[in-house]
Image (cartoon, rainbow, N blue to C red; front, side, top):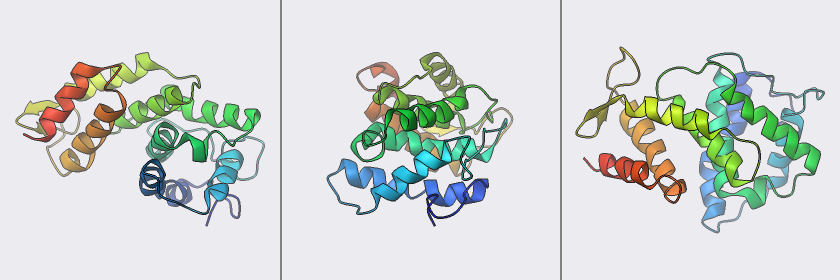
Length: 196
């Protein structure tokens, strides 16, 4: 159920609210229709408002909330007409402040760093406060995990595993598409690595 109907302050409930955006935002960006964007907007407004009973809560270090923020970042970047533009100024400010908190707490040193990247790209797309310094630091760290021939390890001392296609290449290609104009060399590297 959506935040407008039930509390989703628990991270598992936030996951249920956020994860469909991985499909809905590209659907909207490609011209597809979804009849219930109003429910998402109400959820964004209530979930990001500290005074609301359905507030998602300020993320703790290494918190699951940081994971779910990535879907919001993607939606802001590619479907702002559906998820951002109809919000009123106070709702925009609250949502942007909540998302920006991904730059203020420790994040797991693995593929999770891409979540910080996607959130900052989304915030920048809608001219909300963002932190490209934190984003580029995350990208540099991610690139330090590259092993060659399309392979990454998933952070310091971690193995190479299924997060390569489902995280490193997946998010890397999203970045390459969204940041081609502002970071062409890195975007090209991500594209090349995905085909190795």
